[in-house]
Amino acid sequence: MRARSRFLPGGWLSVYAFLYIVFLYLPVIFLPIFSINTSPTPKFPLTGYTLQWYEDLPHTPALLDAAWNSLIVGISASVLSTVLGILAARSITRYRYPGRRAINGLIMAPLVLPEVIVAISMLLVMLQLGLSLSLFTVVLGHVLVCIPYSMTVLTSGFEGFDRSLEEASADLGESAFGTFRRVTLPMVAPAIISSLLVCFTISLDEFIIAFFLTGTEATLPIYIWGQLRFASKLPGVLALGTLLLVASFLLMTVAEILRRRAARRTQNEGGLYA
Image: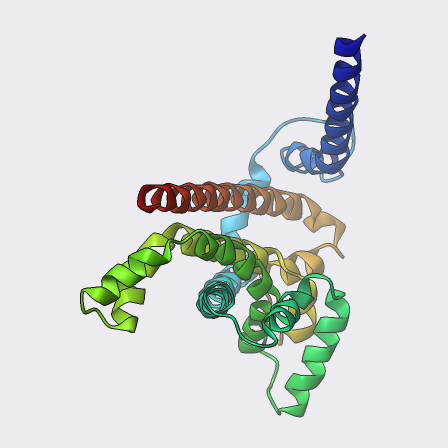
């Protein structure tokens, strides 16, 4: 009876996890399936299999321009968010000062605020500042959204860092900046790379902020939104969405691997110098 009571909760938990994964990912699975269908209408049964929709993607100038714009925005937003995240995570984990938790809460606020409200607020601010809507304004909006994710990744990397390594560097005559560059940054490098990948993925897939702040230069999500108005463009949208899905999955997987490696590294270093 005791063994049965231990088995049942675990069994129900497994069933719940399975149903949750099916509910979450089953609609996503249909995307690559319909992207290789010969019929432009996504329906069962499939009329045939073709890679034509994928082959047509490189021959679409508007798509290539949107992909290039998303690449520029994604790289810029990920780099700026990671740099600012490094400074903020370092400050919050290393120092104790009044208002530290309040500042941390304000930085993380975009995670819980409705993106529509954030986008409209940023649009009003940009217009009041006299900035014309362009890729630059999209980058600023994406930085605001990506910083909390960067902070989450980088804080875990800085929290497990052994401060005795910095103290040893200072005792050997190294300056504060030199210690940060030669000791701290190499130790948290996996977390930094993970932050870059996470921020790039979020920027690549972000739609609402880009919808309000973009000008005449569309990003990939804006391009996909525009193509959905035409039924003949739907197969190409499905193929493009499949590629974005695969790219996002790979980037997030690599980011998680690097984050776990950074966590193990800091724990091992802490145990070594304990």
